[in-house]
Picture 1 (cartoon, helix red, strand yellow):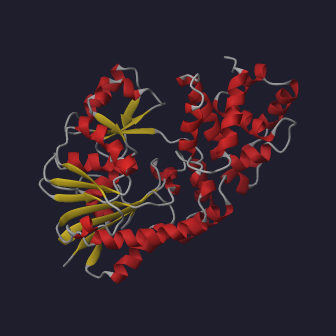
Picture 2 (picture 1 turned 90 degrees about the vertical axis):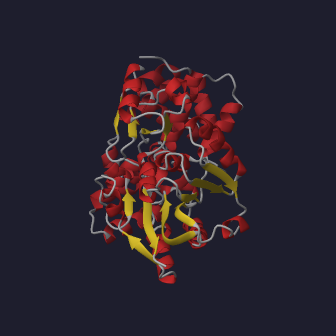
Length: 425
């Protein structure tokens, strides 16, 4: 047993004090906090971050357990997060006798004995929305609890092999040689799932662009686009460019691939990744909005368009647990309006016979099926292509119906939705 330094408990509490204000994304708040504490080493930062994110994932459960005890409320929450991540025995030498007794008592509480609402660790509005969707698909209540449980565990670390520079067998061999346990992902042909959180950025293969960090679900979206060599392709909401790089590799660095985004800082993150990728066909373009004149100039000229639309991100709760406490029904409704506008604008780019893929990392029908169905009703020139058919053409054995619907508890990916639309005329 390794004793946890008392100051790590204090730092965890201090970071929780900031995070629980929910004034911004948890990862950004955490980075800012660590910049203000330059003496914290890599290992210490890891301990603190894992503990506070454990509290964010299980906030209702932790708050319920923290109702007892005599120390400061957020200190009790920090202790619960640390107990989950480093273990109770590591804490005991660094806390008071009263806290030792309290930790002993709460550690004996069976989580299964808690009310379902607390076990699920979801805000009421989100639990209700997901329950309605599960009920509509004729799935059991247990399915809802399984989903909630999956969302409350950290995500695994997935990689995408850069096929321009390596193959999956080579990367698996390199990881094994470095003492890193990894295996192929279940569905994506170039996916690798790594055990734990090794320092991959120290590997020469990473520096040389042999692989990128990318969730398997995100990789599968690119197989729905299925770009071919020499085509004109647009990644409409490119962000930092993970899917852009995957699409470019599928195109074998031929044709022309536009990476659109409204944020310079996100496109700036693409540049170093692009430099080591071996790609020469990517053209980053900052746009003012989905109505930018640059988009109009390409109308009717593009073979394939991917829209990974701005969304609630509620499919990524394993990585971003704060989102469930920051999003609201009102923010989701506002996003759905924006998504519809982006979809309609991006559709103008697609030439007859071209393909449009609309995707989100949300689990909510309001951002997914509802947006697509409204678009199709207003644009009869587009028809739905079953997602499973597109994947089967690429020897990917995954059938979630006409739409791609990925669920963390079923597919071990982030929650993703995608619809494949083709322009007839």
